[in-house]
Image (cartoon, rainbow, N blue to C red; front, top):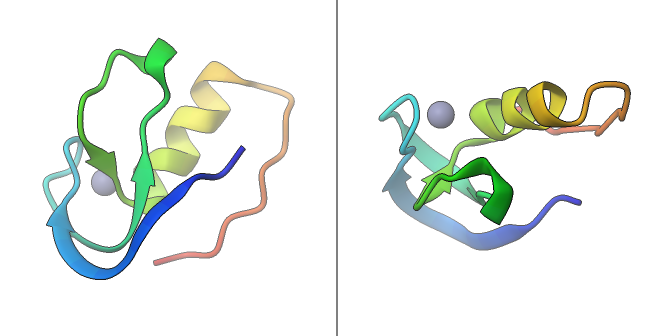
Length: 59
Ligand SMILES: [Zn+2]
C-alpha cells in the first residue's frame, strides 16, 4: 500500500505545500498529480480506505 518514490530529496507536498523528506506517490483514484508527504498520504489513506489501518512513520 505504501509507495515510497524517493528518499532524501526535498520536494513539496501537493496538498499541504510543505517540504517533504519522504515522498509518497498519490494513487490514481485520488485524482492527485504529484507527491505527498507522509502526513497527507496517511490522511488520504484513511479518507479513502476507512477501516484499513496503515502504519506510517511520521516525517
Ligand atoms: Zn502534505
